[in-house]
Structures are given as C-alpha cells and as structure tokens.
Length: 148
Image 1 (cartoon, rainbow, N blue to C red):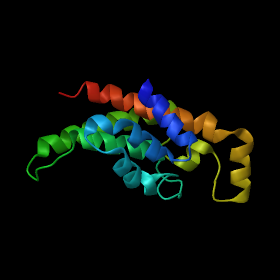
Image 2 (tube, rainbow, N blue to C red):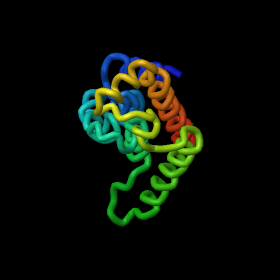
Image 3 (cartoon, helix red, strand yellow):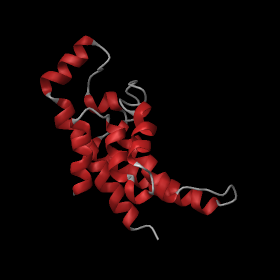
C-alpha cells in the first residue's frame, strides 16, 4: 500500500504516470529512484505525450523487465517467463480498463485545447490516471511476489 501511495504522490507532484509507477517499484529491483525517474520520463503521456500506450502500463512493464528479464542472450526461458508475466499484466489491465491506449483511457486528446479543457473539467488525471497508477503498482507487486 505504501508503494501505491508513493506512486500517487509522485504523480500529484508533477511526475508523469510512468515515472510514478517505476519510481514506486524500483527500490527492491536495485534501481535508484533518480535513474528510474530519468528512464521513465519519455514514456509518460502514452509515449512522449502521443497518447499511445498508457504511461502506467509502460512503468509496470519496465518493472517486470527489471525483475524477470533476460540478461544472457541464450536464456530463452527468462525471456519467455518475462513475456508471460507481462502478458498477464496487460490482459488484466485491458480487462479492467478496456484499453492500453492513453487517449482511449482518458477519452480525450490532451494535445488539443478542447481535450485539455475536458480533462480538466472532468478531473480525469485524478479520477482515472490515479486509478491506473494504483492498479499498475498493485498488480506488478502481486505478480512479482509469485515469481520464483
């Protein structure tokens, strides 16, 4: 629960959703928080604010990769194991939220004045993005606890 609160606080402080998720999960994965924040910077807003894959999803996948990813070119088992865990996470995110795409999750294009106004008027960063961040952190923690 502390990691979820840390992620949501980071988002409230102005870090993007990817930074919030990865920085909350980085410590047990031997990644320094500053490095996590730098690494995740271009992945927020659905990949450099293009509203493609949700930043919370990107941060979750980075954490899964750090925990289970392949480090030897011949370790196909690790590669497959990481892919399986990532797909479990992605399937759950889609099932719960209906999409992986930032623009679809928000329902507006934040790169337009009209979209920004609609997002602000509906308080979607707090209402929706905070939930995506919390779910990403919670589900990654659950998945990684099951990893041998």
